[in-house]
Image 1 (cartoon, rainbow, N blue to C red):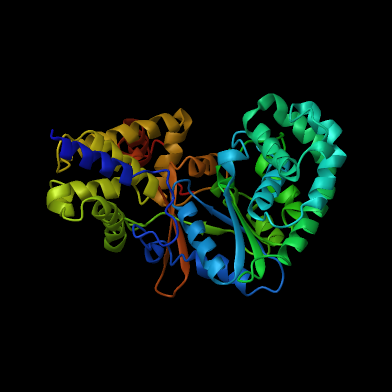
Image 2: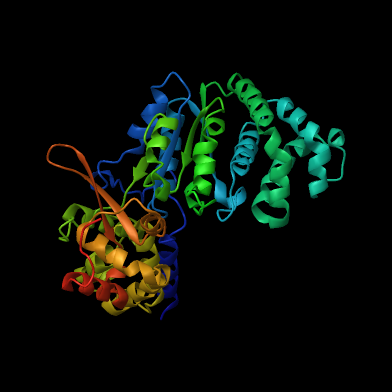
Length: 453
């Protein structure tokens, strides 16, 4: 392998980074709306904000890794162009622990990011609130210094320390919540006073304020009691009035499993609009046949990244050994963008020199298939088999968990009457697993009830 080849493969590996959302206007972006049920975040969420005289509080859902963050960054840019000052943050990076999140964590995160983004506004209301709680909070190792002796900048930094400890320090997390929970309403009042002052002092090109809280969809759902209520119910329903209490437009991401729960109607009622869902790219039709427009979009996702690094390479003859190798990777992703990026990185890693061979692609497929084999529980193969044969799901915890874990994928399309249709399928990688094949065979043999969900 020459040094030039090694550098090329390194650059290509980086181009397929699966955890890097594309910023608005990135030349690698591919508009997949037509193969995602005509999805368009600027029309759905953006116009709701733009055309509402009241504050809007909207939920955005979808499978993790489907491209929500990239779409939300596009929404951020769209709103800025409409005269909105937008505060976007990915909550799981510095603010919350997805394995253990409560409403208070989200409120502290919103507070911290608003303070950090709007620096020219006197934060006295929040400073006063912090000062009133200081004797309690300083005991949690935030600081031993008197709050009044801190500079304004250091006073503001205490909110960053709060959220950092909530995310990273399990021993402090619950203690912080216990100290803050009784005073969340007064914190909201102080934050709203800050927001009102901020709106009057925004740069002249901005007249309104919006917050986008991303990656809350990564909060792991679990049951809180024998009655079936979950941690998600507590956050997004029990605390919905507080989530809607801030005097600015807000978009919260929410786990897809909650959108498919028996709480769906409550979500729609509490937030005025049904949650917007970003489905998979439809690479196959419900009948199982290849969907050419969806497959073409997946190819375009690869091609645009390749062209950024090596514009001279032909995708189907020089980057891949054959068209079949390219299409196999696209189809095995199930239309899941992050899975495609992961398999591309793995295929490149298995390659000493271009083109990527069918063998390297197969090794990438096998590697990711192993992850899904471990993800599905022993009692879930028959459930997955039924979904594969019926393209439908039940409204129960097992199906919701399989959606959350991306073992079941959701697709949408507009039918001939322009009606939105949703359907579901098992991830294509799972269909090559022996336990799944055996479960399908038992269904088809009649050993298991074949009544569709």
